[in-house]
Length: 456
Image (cartoon, rainbow, N blue to C red; front, side):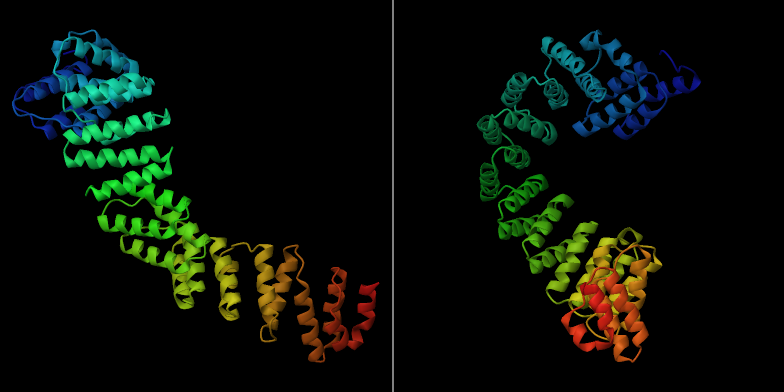
């Protein structure tokens, strides 16, 4: 016992002399004890008959140690006799060393373990591989993977993926592929699926066609790709404009029940949207919603446009209203899309209501949206009052109303016999630099003097 000794520590130590389960061990190691005590307790637990640890267990313990102890605590144990602790303890020290960003220390520990001719397991090999990759010792990684394979030891998905990435980045695609093929001859199906999936992802950064061939070969062999491989395949097919295949792969991913990568389905949706495939976008989004997927603002905006494109105006309005209940979606872009689409289909009343809602929420309207609304309101005389209010709002923002607004208002008031108001709008139009249309000159003869000023 070193620091933190006392009645509580003595009682704790006595408890640890009795058989200890993994949950109890994890609970014990969280307590405020010294690193020496932690090593002692952990080693005693590992020496119990039938006590087993997996990679996730030692990773969890290493995270606790990395957060509690200093780097000097680790360095002080490297020169100890290797026989003092069982392999899981040294493996956990190596993982802790990696977490503390001292990969060379990890390598030194592993070399000492191997010098003693100890039988090492995946627990020790994995942190060693991580450290080698961190130190860019690719040749040693290559030898270590082969050494593991000879002992029927298979790396976990993460370190395998990083190793394959490193091979492919160095241009050794064939070598990466050969390792996976050789390992698959000796390994269980679960490793084969993981290895080929990681290989697909690694090779995709260098060769799209090779990655797609590997993906399809996997499925031909009856192997199930993981969600990383599915996502990679979807993105590659999108970049190659092979949309139908990308849709099919995404649907297969959904049916497989594996985790969904938002960036993957967003990419497919946006590519389909840009290529004017609204029906396909909506089909994918509806299927994704059933799976509990969530969408960002850009994707939701695309969905509104698609609903309008296929004539589902009611659904577009319902979806938009539902979005507004969530303040996260009170975005000018969504209002812009909705108002523009409503103007396109002639639903002026709802477009005006949305504009009022924007004003009430303090959402600023840009010049382009003002222009769209004015064009919509100028199509008939039914919305003159709304056009008047909008023109005043436009001017209050320091912007200029469009010429159609002046023409519509001048013509309207002239037809009502209100020549003074018609003259005011005609004068404003000329001051803004707009020229009167031939139609105005014919229909508004009393305003020729103003038009002549504008013409001069």
